[in-house]
Amino acid sequence: ELKVEQNPLFLSMQEGKNYTIYCNYSTTSDRLYWYRQDPGKSLESLFVLLSNGAVKQEGRLMASLDTKARLSTLHITAAVHDLSATYFCAVVHMDSNYQLIWGAGTKLIIKP
Amino acid sequence: ETGVTQTPRHLVMGMTNKKSLKCEQHLGHNAMYWYKQSAKKPLELMFVYNFKEQTENNSVPSRFSPECPNSSHLFLHLHTLQPEDSALYLCASSLRTSVGYNEQFFGPGTRLTVL
Image (cartoon, rainbow over all chains, first blue to last red; front, side, top):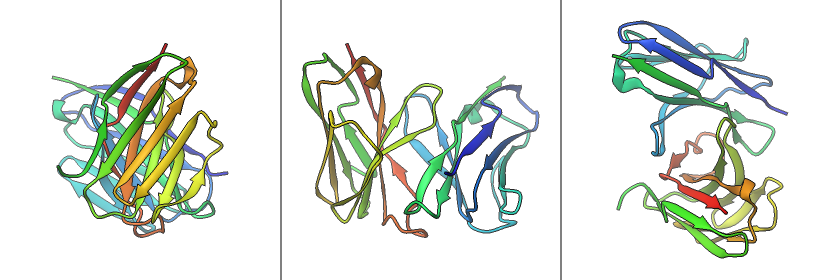
């Protein structure tokens, strides 16, 4: 059974600081998604990471994937208030009809 | 309308009521999903439809009954629910369910409260 663990589950930080959210998963997969959810809104796809060593960047967010370590990171650089949201990682479960298995989410609050 | 829409956005129902949630996607996708999102828990996949055929039912109680009349519409029929069924119900769609085509696009969700 594929399990996905995110940490931390809650993060409060000041604007301008850097931080990293971690997503660990328990069995082999070579495709991982990061999503963002604002309160009362849809989940929005941020990144698709397709292979070992993949790195993608959009603005102040950068995501990477290490399939050997079964780890993905979402790094926030010089955080701004608008990045406050809940961030989810989801891993494709190759042995279960390619279902997405979701982490519990990291609620990020960035204080001005 | 664009993307994935869901109605109603909020629903309060008693345990003896019957209600339905509706999802519509305007993305030309062929796969649709129902998820349950409860506080402090990972998203729980409930049902998957691919080209109108149900491909996944993740041990969902029979008081939840999905219906997919075509690739653009998905319903979740609810009857005799329990208070623990209160949650945000999210609909999503993707081009297909197979890897490489299964990036999912979500609707805004229906906030369900069962009294």
